[in-house]
Amino acid sequence: MLDMRRREFITLIGGAAVAWPLAAQAQKTKIPRIGIVDDSPMWQTFRQALRELGYIEGQTVNYEYRYGDGVPDHLATATNELVRRPVDLIVTYGTPPTQAAKMATTTIPIVMVGIGDPVRAGLVMSLARPAGNITGNTIVSPDLGAKRLQILREAISSVSRVAYLANPDNASSMATLAEMKVAAATAGMTLTSVELGSGTDFDGAFAALLRDRPDALLVGNDPLHQLHVDRIIDFLARQQLPGMFQLKEHVVAGGFLAYGASVPDLFRRAAGYVHRILQGTSPADLPVELPAKFELAVNLKTAKALGIEVPPTLLARADVVIE
Image (cartoon, rainbow, N blue to C red; front, side, top):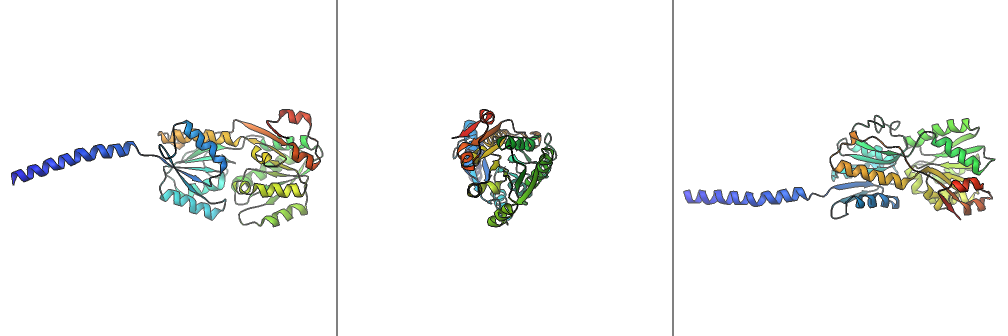
């Protein structure tokens, strides 16, 4: 009986000695899982930046993708699925996905990219001290709206009536609309809005725009609008209506003019925040970053089709010129 107990004790100790290194090794090699909402080609910059920091997909990091297509209910489902998975961190682009992620979790870190105004949208307490589990960067900066209108008037000297494409489902889009109205009044322009949200018919929104035809249409960085930007650009081309966009990528796609923060740069900087959080830094200790790089883009092919002669002084300042 004594020998049997002795053998059982040795077996128990031996089993623990084998199990402990295996458990330690599993813990040591745990691969972080990052959740991404509404993946698209623009996210390549983010993944490349993480690769440069040593995060190799399938080896040192795994990505979980969920899609909401800019629709509030779908975004809620997507973010809740990521929380249940669970992931170690969620990355979002734009305000609606970030709001959905905030509703889904108060513990999993969230890094937001290209948010309009995270304080007004209720995502963080302040830029310097975000508090909670959310940080990242914003696409807006002081006087951005006024600068966009100034560039638009420099390109089209006769412009006086402009319309802004707003998404009523996006708090940042509506906040930008309010700011643009102030900037337009200061610049001596009249600004109206055309709403295009997840429940809005595109043809209806376009018809409303044409009923009070403006001299130009201002398009922001709303995620829903970006999903359908080709359709917006095609409509503007058919109606011979100049479009002022916020992202240079939309000018490359055929839009007339763009001025705004560099989205690839925002994604690169977000990757740096993801790295720091995975290394143990709390999101609450990372201030929300303002954009550091802005880009001016002009499409001369589109300008020619619109009958617009772009001033050489504006072309000389452009970062991207499509000929």
